[in-house]
Image (tube, rainbow, N blue to C red; front, side):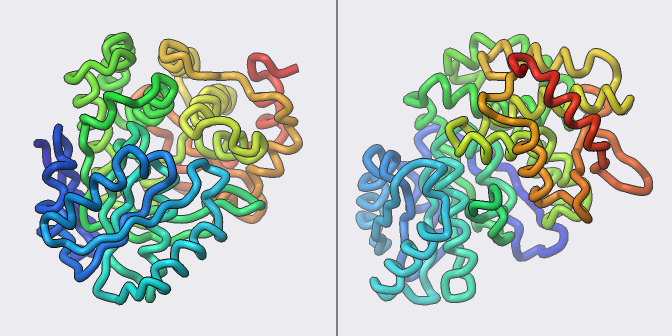
Length: 372
């Protein structure tokens, strides 16, 4: 088992460990008891993961004399809403969960965000543990304490920073992960490499077939290296006041793609499209080295990820969605852009994000492959 510490510099008592290994679901009761002791546990999951692992986890907790109850909600990004958050909170209140309870988020990114938001707000905040079951959740969304829900105006516009007490990544659950979900997770791995580690990008290029085949060693390296990169960034900037903004590479366009497509596109697929567009924007702004965009596109294409804007994603709609992005300031859309593979652009005045002229953004979007 690999243990990676996330030392939150702004709030030392919020620091926590990420455990990565095989067979960790069997060890979950002991890990949870040590890191997040509570009188009762609310295991929050969705209807898909609930069938696979929900009852198993609750039974193991019961067998270890840890009282637990399962709370399911319908699977799908379109259910990551205020209504779901409210329903889960009301159900916990009806079951009389008190301030001495804790939440276990069992599932992918949607479950982690919703369950984390429930934990952040339930009785003004209770502790929680992330138990991610998708590659994307293991390497990205389960780490960093960002919780929240989507609203009609955009993605993740309501939420809170609430760090977990522990993250448990059991690599065994990835063996049943569909190929499309593996690729979606790799999109975030590519992002991590682009923002911080050129050698990691080279690994993802070189070991493409092994990762796609879910080779045990290859997946363990992907999870461990991505977690190391994200943990380092989050540890130094818990609330996205500085360098943490680099983790948003590909997300300004990506979130707009998700919103305009009504979440018919997987998050990782949308981020792949976003990175392809934003890398081209970085070159157009003369921020990135020439060839950076093509290199990023090549890696993403190797994993079968989409790079074209999904129809009917009108440029006007995408621009409108971006203007509601959390990174927008005074109506100006801002982007976290690469300087080269493994290094992000930083300006002494504006920090880790840059504003781009709307006309240029439109030109890049309109020039996206497959977009007429």
